[in-house]
Image (cartoon, rainbow, N blue to C red; front, side, top):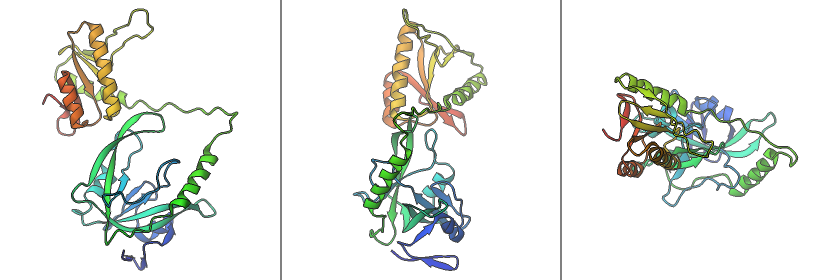
Length: 302
């Protein structure tokens, strides 16, 4: 792979720099994994894998699979993700740096420059489901990045990464006698259902919440939203991931059975789900709606 000219200096693949030094040369922001600069470059930073995860490398199709930006909810093609996807049309070159898992005094991380990449032309990305640190399912973007100038990419030695993973696991593990606590994540579904209610009200619909209690159980059976105008029970989810849609289907079928079997059913999602999930919901007579910039919300019935 060729050396890269950056401002008044050149660096070759394999060169190690602090992230601050990278930005001194390239520009861009210090935070985030994808950092577009004001010029013609996009910087991509590969972090240290989680313990138990494989070391970064080229997949059998010859590309580096890189998860997009966005730590909460489903990832979208906005901001940095959009910039990376369209870097060729925008005339930008993508330079990738990998965390070596080592630090300087003061805590600065060292990154290894592994070369220039480009988003694969034939199949630039795919979606995948993952579970975040709070145990919630969400959908993420996996970019396929192809090395420019050959596949001899100087990735960080996997053995070094494994050692750093073990150190991180030991460092972050609490003592056995200490019980850790975790703050519950903010329910992103609240804002989504509020937007959909406003969408329905603007069209003259009446909405409410109804309770469908189960005899001999403490479950109140309060549904997320009931459209009185169309007699539709809606279940809202903060992710379009497969597990979330499956859960919503089960809840709706339970609600409808307890209601008497006459109500229509709908799922409110933050983004369009996979095509096969749309087909599944349609086969069960379940409407799926998600936000759309032009019309407010799109529906599987459109």
